[in-house]
Length: 309
Image 1: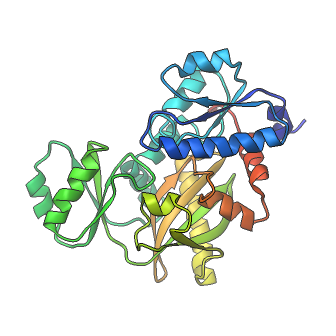
Image 2 (image 1 turned 30 degrees about the vertical axis):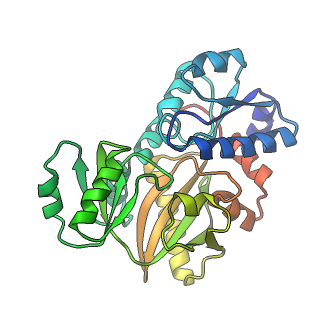
């Protein structure tokens, strides 16, 4: 019996919703995954992951968890750790990879060690001398973002010192640790990685010029160029860099790696260990271009479920 067939004979609990700022997107991802599993005749149920999660998992007789949670308490290693304690195999990356990838600062440090380019950055911690930090930033524009959030929540493009003050305020609403990055003017692209294989590269062109929360999750607000209209050498380098980043972090299952491209320079922005699976999500688009329909993508992610070893 294959690994895929093994999990398809088990009670699958799809974890969605949760407690993070990305709750609504997680519900959309989770329900799409649940429909796909049930459409294939699998014994799958959905579960909104609240603070009673351990009891609910046991009550439902979970034999494998399909994690469709985004953001904190789902994508950051915490739920993965709980499932390890309960000895319930789960989809996606393990505890360490999830925790590291969720922290954009630590991710950057790992990427740089492995030779993957990333925008220059500075770090502001809540309580530090804010004015001294702002005075130390000599080149604008910059991007201010919470170090441990996703879906572009709390992210600002800032063009001067006053804008940086407002950007820090916005980011600090979500996290005590703020990453302030060099703004890279170029093409925004994303590379899905399934198992150890890169998917076709997508270029993201938001109509508003900034790929923010609304652009990501409102149909029609963003144009997706697939395949990305970039030189073949750049495409190849992006795919290699994406796989390198996932290996460096220890990712498992499906992941999505976001980049900015300036000429032939590549700048990795982040690694998403639980990519969105909504109607506007990038991973299903890339998989579809590779000949993998949505329900097959879900089954491939399920096939890779397990516990940390």
